[in-house]
Amino acid sequence: MQRKWRRGHQWISRTDKYLVRHVSKLPGGNHDEFFRRLSASANHGKLWMGIAAVLATIPGRPRRAALHGLIAQAVASAVTNGVFKTLLPRARPLPEHLPVFRFVHPQPKSSSMPSGHSASAVAFAVGAGLVKPSLGAALAPAALGVAYSRVHTGAHWPSDVLFGSAIGAGAALVTRRWWPVRPSFPQTARTWTTAPQLPEGEGLAIVVNTLGGSFTKETAAALQQVFPKAYIKTVQPDDDLCAAISETSDRPGTLALGVWGGDGTVGAAATAAVERSLPLLVLPGGTINHFARDAGTGSLKEALAAASKGEAALADIGAITVERGLAGKPEKAEVTMLNTSSVGLYPNFVRRREQLQPALGKPLAGVVAMFRTFAAGTPTTLTVDGRLHRVWIAYVGRGRYYPRDHAPLLRPVMDDGVLDIRMITADESFARLRLLWSVLTGTLATSRITHLSEAKEVRIEAGGAPMVLAVDGEALAGVRSVEYRVRPRALAYYSPCP
Image (cartoon, rainbow, N blue to C red):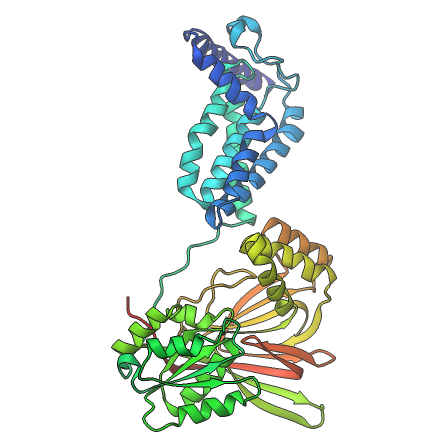
């Protein structure tokens, strides 16, 4: 065995010297200084950290690519310098092997095998490329240049660079296993249906909630300009919202119900529309109107186009049975859910994230909000479909949301017939440390504390004291149990055709 290893080692050594001789015969020039500077810029990963800092200013995939690249680089550097350089001691090239003017100065004193610069360079480029391939392609020449510069400047043998590059690529692939690349969102799909055409809003009755987050004194007048023939009912803070919606829906000549307000207002209007078999036009009101965004009516221009042409689709709705009151004398109520419902710390997380988002951007605001929320929060004991859990968050969405992690954003399909159930549990040992670590590293979606599932029905019961239930942004206190089910394609809503 030792003879085979020695023969293999001698073959690698001869090949290295052969290749270095050819490099040494290259004519001198400005490229020598270029490779020397390029090699120095990558010392201690400075080059890749600088590139990551620039990419971090670009929201979305570039920012995630930078984070993935840095994580892969850190793993590659730790494995290279902490493990293999100790196990594989090897002398570096001598001045007799290359022209002296090319030699890096001072030459590193650690083992030559493997090349840490090459490992970090390839790890960062491949790690970033797994998230955004075009970025990986753009970084590839720089990574290859750094790897070659280690041979050109006499810091490493070619086999050191090759082994280091393999470690870097392997580190990127390993980190992808526990920190998977976020998949692309599926294409928007609709189940189209017929609805009355409402030119200039004729036959449209609109309810405007003045408590909507973006309401101003000009809101009603602006809507009247867009829909000059529509009836508009403005609901003041002291008015009964549900009564106003019912009254507006029952007006003679009403062909469709419009609503301007937050998610809670839209949910109340949806209930009235379903009861009266009226199509619903959801206008972009409130602080964040999730249904309008998912329906494609996120602007008045889009809403007007869909209503004028009678373009509409069908959506499922969530039917919730809420049990409140004393254990011996429960009070039951039926609630409609258009978007989401949650128990636990999720409402606090969303509130903090929205407060921080203008200053930090959504991804960073989400991380900071998660730390603040869960560092001080306590888990809630719940029974979910007969199984006892301690949870930080129990979340139920009406429809499959994306991305498939702790922060759902978009719902491309409005009638898929499922409830999107997500739980972040505290059942595991070191639950708080696991939670904070997964938030810090962006691995919450793949952590053991995160549980993703889908169902058509689900029941949640309070494990001890009554719980606070949030439905489409509206809080219900004193809840003892809640049952969710899907009413398939119960709501017709206006949505512009592509």
